[in-house]
Amino acid sequence: MDETMSLTDAMTVSKPKPPVAKPAFDLGEKPSLIGLTREEMAAALKEKGVPDKQVKMRVSQLWNWLYVRGVSDFDAMTNVAKDMREMLKAHFTIARPEIVEEQVSNDGTRKWLLRFPPRGAGRPVEVETVYIPEEGRGTLCISSQVGCSLTCSFCHTGTQRLVRNLTAEEILAQLLLARDRLGDFPDRDTPLGAMVPAEGRKVSNIVMMGMGEPLYNFESVKTALLIATDGDGLSLSRRRVTLSTSGVVPEIFRTGDEIGVMLAISLHAVRDDLRDILVPINKKYPLKELIEACRAYPGLSNARRITFEYVMLKDVNDSLEDAKGLVQLLKGVPAKINLIPFNPWPGTNYQCSDWEQIEKFADFINAAGYASPIRTPRGRDILAACGQLKSESERMRKTERLAFEAMMIANHGADD
Ligand code: SAH
Ligand code: SF4
Image 1 (cartoon, rainbow, N blue to C red):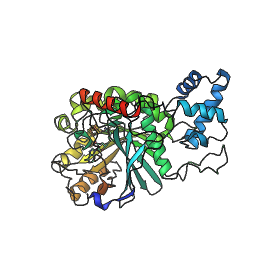
Image 2 (cartoon, rainbow, N blue to C red; image 1 turned 30 degrees about the vertical axis):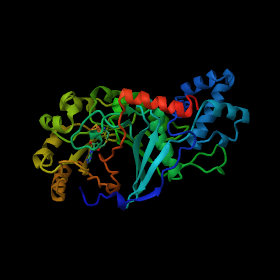
Image 3 (cartoon, rainbow, N blue to C red; image 1 turned 120 degrees about the vertical axis):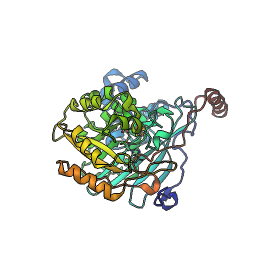
Image 4 (tube, protein in one colour; image 1 turned 180 degrees about the horizontal axis):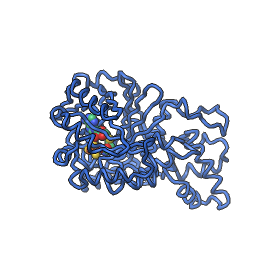
């Protein structure tokens, strides 16, 4: 294991906190208003008796409180009448997930371990979210699944079986929680209706590069990202949101067409025989199909390029032959290349390429006309760097789950 990787180096700034509004195992949770489309929110309010003619106004009021002001408590909604607030409280929640742990790396990178209710997984699940501050911007790396069903051989997340997909609410909650913790929402004294200027926000960019394969959870990822980029709410620019995929070809066109965000492809190899091993989904969707899908990506242009991620693995994919192959493969595709020094994790057999070799590789790519930034590893000391994320969550066996649920119902009652 890399000697920089010691959890004890990392400062833990907040200890496990009890969940704000509900017990850790709330089997009868109230539905959240977060992560609903406007139409879904309208339907939810109507169902609880909000008169038709009020619904539209209520939805935009709530939208503003939830996504412009970032409140997580109905009582903070000062322009909503008290009886309406009581009704909302009785039927819905807007609470944040439980923070199990918050770590800050020596380089300022933060990692949160968040806990969500089981929602079919048997026991509560945990995912990681990472914040990376840089000169002039701050990037939040969001997870889309608990674990991953794919098994890329160099990826730590890939060693954790898929437990379940995250819901749209849970995906969005990672952004809301980061903005809370970083002081990115206006405080209570800011006049109602005032927008927070986009510049100066701590979270300026989002990358769907945390745990999981976002295109295997398309609908929830889509809903969450459309809310994150909605101009009347969280207002992130679509150009500052990047979705990374290992190459789920059938969903690539839809990503551009229906979500309209920037695309990153986890390429890592330029020959099918090697990519079959490193990124096994390649056996299903080989390089030729993947590159064709990239060429057809909606909105692709020199101003809106696809990022190709390439992890540098010593003696595996880091030769100048590989560099040549990379340039050839991407010919004619508006592309950026992102060389990622391999981040080691406990138990891996791979090693990061030597720095000299990474530079030689980068020089070749540069000479071919790509500004090819080498991505500086961030947060390695707290296992927060690319591919190091993993949580302890495992899916319970059915018998185990039923026994556990019966016990929780006995302890808490089904509805509280
Ligand atoms: N499942 C998606 C999203 C995760 S993104 C995908 O694979 O694209 C995480 C990025 O980090 C991917 O490009 C992934 O290939 C890369 N990665 C995984 N393990 C890594 C490691 N140990 N070191 C460096 N990069 C890694
Ligand atoms: Fe899953 Fe992406 Fe890791 Fe592959 S690289 S195992 S797709 S998270």
